[in-house]
Image 1 (tube, rainbow, N blue to C red):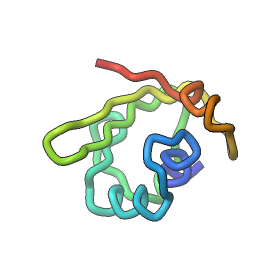
Image 2: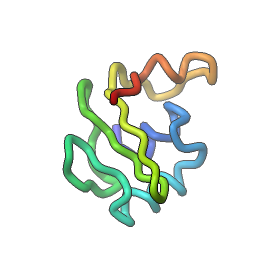
Image 3: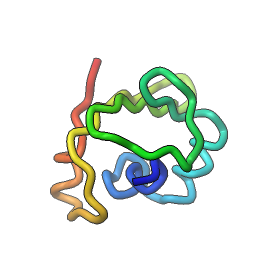
Image 4: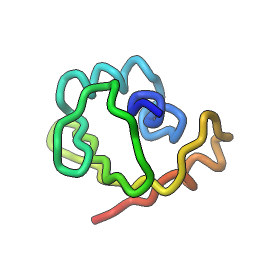
Length: 80
């Protein structure tokens, strides 16, 4: 699954267009490397999303095409 779609499905970012823009602006890192929105997420990837001076770092636990809002956090765990 593309990273922009994963970020939307997991509810880490509410809109896929925003997730795509953030990745293309190099504000999304996977395993310490900047990636574009076309990057394919894998289980155990460490995703870091940069929100200005703050960052959120999560580990991918599962990948699903869709998920209910209450189950979205089952797709990742916050690290650090």
